[in-house]
Amino acid sequence: MAVTLAPWRSAIARALHRNRSLVYARYLQLATVRSDGRPANRTVVFRGFLDNTNQLKFITDDRSEKALQIPQNAWGEVCWYFPNTREQFRLLGQLSLIDEKNSDATLRQARQRQWQELSDAARTQFAWADPGKLRSPDDPFTPPSPDASSPLSNFLLVLLDPIQVDHLELRGEPQNRSIYRQINNEWMVDAVNP
Image (cartoon, rainbow, N blue to C red; front, top):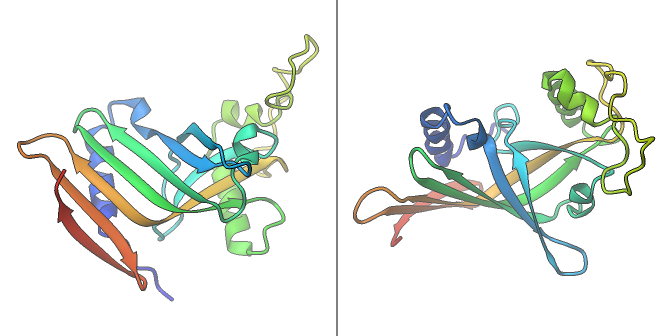
């Protein structure tokens, strides 16, 4: 089944383009709920969209607290603010963690491509000592650079598959706000009060 790109994709592409001078415009906050019911929020880097889908890509280390706070198929919401254009996007959807054992060969290949697109410095962080553990003077923070073609086993590709997007444009009087909802695989949009 062919995926139709969501109408909110063009608004995000425009915001990314108009904020491209700001390296941190690719940083956004991801909120989830821990297994004990407490909230978890962390900053992640937007790594693009998965092929021709509406799924946003992020990465994490499966040894990190961040990975442990994202159960498979959990709900999550990202909040993304673009300073130059004064826009906020909140994207709600299900999260998928893609590891080397994922049953879908296409997703395993996407994980490998994402690894290959990382800088050497970013790949090396996955070879550091275990995140969140007590630091030891013997911890290796200058390990040899990992193989650029094969991801380390602790490297995870994280996908967010949105079902709702709230786009708030803070410029203008009045401000503009649109809510995009996926209903029966179709995207609907409503202009709502800010």
